[in-house]
Amino acid sequence: MKESSIKQKLNTTLDKIIDNKKIFGAIANIQSSNNSFSWSKSAGNLNKNSQYAIASITKLYTLAAILKLRATGHLQLEDTLSKYFSKDFLCGLHTYKGIDYSENITIKQLLSHTTGLPDYYTQKGENGKSIFDEVILKDKSLSFDELILMTKKMKPKFKPDEKRKAFYSDINFDILGKIIEIITCKKLNEFFSEAIYEPLNLKDTYLYDVDSKDSFAPIYFKKQILHRPLFIASAFSSGGIVSNAQENMIFLRAFFEGKLFPKEYLEELYIWNRIQWFPLKYGIGMMQCKMSRLMSPLFPAPEIIGHSGSTGTFAFYCPKKDLFITGTINQTTKNPFQLVYRLLNCFD
Image 1 (cartoon, rainbow, N blue to C red):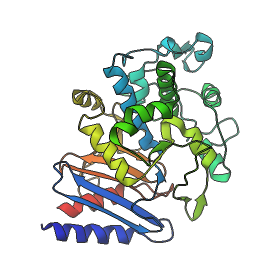
Image 2 (tube, one colour):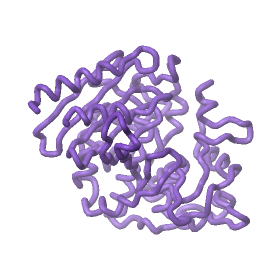
Image 3 (cartoon, helix red, strand yellow):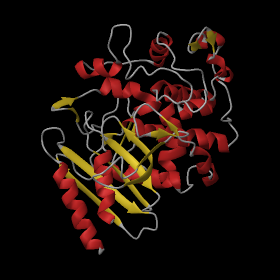
Image 4 (cartoon, helix red, strand yellow):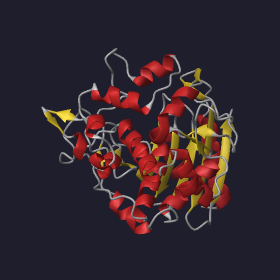
């Protein structure tokens, strides 16, 4: 198929997603690894350079930082939490069937969501609401210590590293961010800047905080605009970065092309376990989505690896098509996978 025909199909596909009921704006950026193809487009109330909260795609940046520290000998993936936190701080974080596993949780288990720790973001707390439920109603700030305390009051799902079990929980990556700060003696955004932003010349990517002057594109919950700067600032290493599709693409390619850490580390990350959102699986710090034709009768769905975010963001590599794709639909009530696959299938 001619490049012009592919781009015309991509343009039409992205334009069609705007329904002004749930999706009011979209951005997508696609590149081939050999640079023979490049396309980017925006639709609705977003433009190509719009900055947006990338949500859990932040986890890929945290993973890259951890792997960089591993490469420089500052940590090992088998390091336990007892190396970085006091016994008093950890006590009761993970008590399962009367046994406290907190001190023995490893960095690798945090990265792979195999700790069994509960998820404060989606699970209901003592007041009968999850943090997501609360934030939909009102913006709120949460400190790391508050998140740890909330987690301690919830029941773990299973003991750490129980065979073939994984449960996606933001607290895993919140803890990893704190470990990075402890090792480097730097604020997380400072280390991200040193290890990721500056080497890749990212000018519009940063870890959001309440003092940030830059604004980012509105996030929607159905038709409601959610302006939640306090919570996004609290999301930290699990979901607090603001970027744009172009710079997210630069990062994504650098991640898979070995520009941030030794490329041989990548193969170690592809250990896939099912998580609570079928058919998604989780490896070491990244997602995999793969569906057969039986599971997806409307369109083929080849393997993509990378990460999505709860605000409708996406950053994936498709090995079969050798394509990278980044962007957002900025909607919390609709996942972006249908759009991702419809765009990728424009190349068939």
